[in-house]
Image (cartoon, rainbow, N blue to C red; front, top):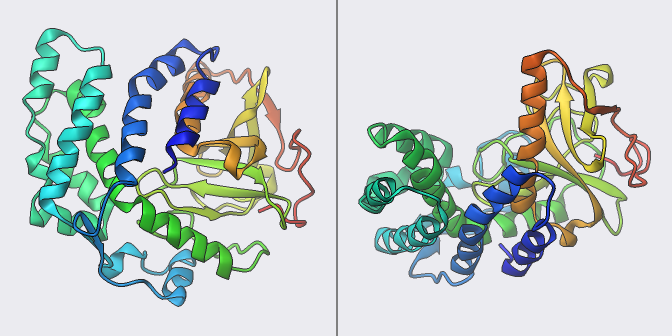
Length: 322
């Protein structure tokens, strides 16, 4: 995670038109900044790379094989993890708008339940299953505190501990895989198995405008075909469309008629270094909520854009667009 990137993105959206999005950024922006600081300060005493995965293992993971983390290559120190859970919790608690009673309940939560050998052994190899276990472990915690405080802190702590490893695996994958589209590529994260939070189409030096998927759990990213659903993998052009607010073509949802998924997608006006996928994921929640409301009412007022009709000047499918 790059703190400067998050800072620039948060500044860019300080006056964003959607008040709910601005409020979310105000609450969770400080947590993301602290997570980035933490991720870049961790030492081998905190998180150890047991062994470097082979290029063949990374490529196989991207094609649907076992995820990279499933090989048990990362080891988290429980005492360090507890320390940093509490560190992130203080930051989030300071920015959440809670009543005195809610704040007291949140402050009393014991994050030590996530800093055990058993929980971390599961999280190191399979964060998806560990997260499901965390939901069950906190079933008696008031829903608002669990959803707005406990689980975000746990998620960001895991992100900090996985981030450098996942980013390096992403770099190695990009260097080794072919530039042509591969419809056998998995949609879930090759590194940890989670569903991607957001997609982005951005300019590259050698391959034109490339679509990538971004994992918010571990920080990995990987290229993906433009004409393909990132949830179910459907490739039928007639089933896929982009919708966006009439005043903002950069932020879109990639709609799949086959599985009814709506994938948040940024058409970046610059390149991959000029946007932050974590912040953009929050910004796109505004469009997701508007779309859900429109579907509930039976009307979809947003503009419909077919794949490949990018207003940012993208080339035609098959010429570097994934």
